[in-house]
Length: 333
Image (cartoon, rainbow, N blue to C red; front, side):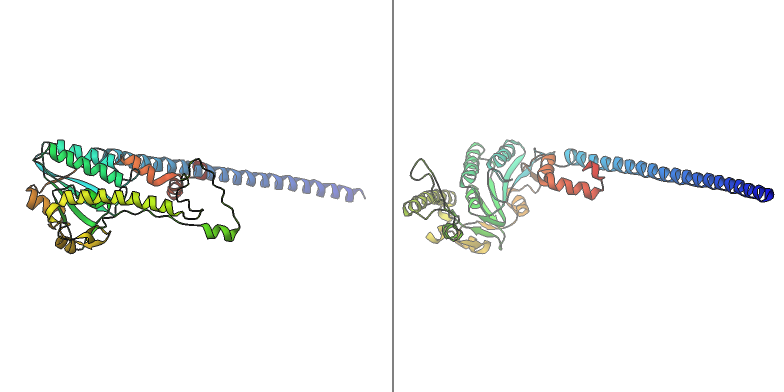
């Protein structure tokens, strides 16, 4: 009996020692795994920090490149010797667009004031836009032509020179285009929508309160009033007549067409040449080389600072997409 008790005690002691060894081994394994995991996590964090650092460096490099190397507000850049000045008028002509009167007028003044300018080319690719903005530009061209009579002004049409674009071109001494260019659209338009029937179908009542009988002029949710339509047509007719006068003053006896020229129709470059809307077929390089006599072209187009254009085009949403594309961690977005 005593021997069995001793044997049981010895076995229990052995089992206890074995359990202690197992606990120690398990603890050691956990410590090793923990150290390995922490080491891997630390390495991952270091790699991520370096990745962020290099990506930020790349972003700074791009910004510096945009600011330093790309052409900024001055447009003309560095040049020496005689040259042909070029000003691009692209897109819709409007106060809040790239082709706005302030920008174009600034470029015009710089080009004319440059003592090396032998001639000026207005390269136009515009469907038109604001008659006010186009009028400002036309007036300034005429003023500068009087002030600098030795600098000839040519308009060169790219794809399209319509409506307000042609309003500007008419201020040039001569107009050139490609045979497939679209030219004309000498007219005025004002458009909108009417939702009166839609409102009735939806059971929505329009409540428009005004002080002034015509303050709600052509309200799209109210029935059309003939006297208001007549008033707007009179107004558009007045602006149209201003447009016609500008074209006739600019083109003079070169116009070979009749009243159809002023109906808002548009023609190809070849047709425009026959109608007297342009003076010949040719590109900007042709005009600079053959007509002005200075093949070197210097761009005076006024453009916003590169950083401003970069920020405007990206916006908040686009910047977020860029951050994701660069792989920045979520906490930096």
